[in-house]
Amino acid sequence: MIKKDMDWKNIGFQYRKTNGYVYAKCINGKWGEVQFSTDEYFPIHIAANVLHYGQACFEGMKAFTTKDGKAAIFRPNMSAKRMNRSAQRAVMEKVPEELFLKAVKEVVKKNIDYLPPYGTGSSMYIRPTLIGSGPTIGVTPSEEYTFFVLVTPVGPYYKEGFKPVQSIVIDEYDRAAPLGTGDTKLAGNYAAGILPAKKAKSLGYPIVLYLDSKEKKYVDEFGTSNFIGITKDGKFKTPKSPSILPSITNDSLQIIAKDIGIEVVKEQIAIDDLNQFAEVGACGTAAVITPIYSVKHNDKTYTFGEKEVAGETLTKLYNILEGIRYGEIEDKYNWLEFVV
Ligand code: PLP
Ligand code: COI
Figure 1 (cartoon, rainbow, N blue to C red):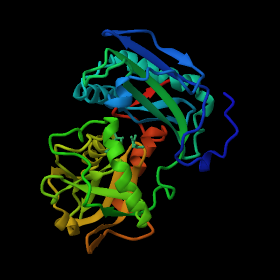
Figure 2: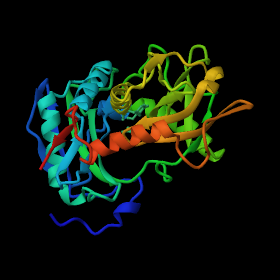
Figure 3: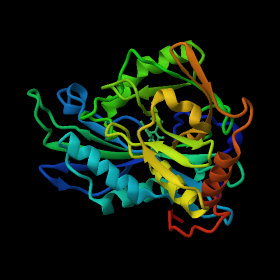
């Protein structure tokens, strides 16, 4: 396959036009076939629920070119399940898992010339999205849903890649209420995060850390990724909270950590207790593992490890995870779904 002519190592994390996207519609509970479109625009009803009441959820996955030249998608079945949990929370029609997988594989296949080649460190970001597309003027569920999947080639989310960044707790905004929607990937969660992220960036911090909204005492997660840390006594710790997204990357890292003999602990982590960590990271599909050098909270700043290089344990976990994804390390967990 002839790849597009691109500076693959320096593509950044941004939307780029590809050959097209796939979609399917659900009308009165009945899903239609997966279709392909080359148009980046589609007509939408002016009273569509998504435009007024925000019936929308999305997923994020990546496809990789493995060492032996195959196209592999990382754990798409987990994303299919999580999308349906999000859908349920906003009373949207679920996407049958088979349809989800078919659509995801199809869109990667149709855009295989945009899948970054092996050795470039880049990958293809896959964005499945589900919206209430039928007209609703009262606040009721839509009777029509559109599921679509777009792809775009990407490099690291934070431009430094696997290099430590500085984080800040923005206390005057909450991301998610304890019984709200923070444990789902509803689009509205992200709208609420744009202002705090903008504020953090203007202060020189590329990544926001949120505390629990009730007590403002415990670490929840970063705006677009989970909090993970390696304690000074070598444990892998991540917060237990009802309002954080169950990250597929975090789940994978926990499995790898246990496998290499690291104890995994899920418990509340007090912001005042961050000194227990030798290493901290933000993990997610886009972020992979982004090492966090420091967290500023009011007038205190906690630091972890060295400013310029990631810590030893997170580096080890990162290398195993990326090694599996690029087909350099045996995929003994069956996490890769091959496309071609
Ligand atoms: N937390 C939030 C709020 C996110 O947006 C994401 C990204 O998807 C994650 C965590 C990480 O989840 P995953 O590893 O499944 O991408
Ligand atoms: C992901 O990591 O897939 C995300 O959804 C995070 C972000 C780009 C919104």
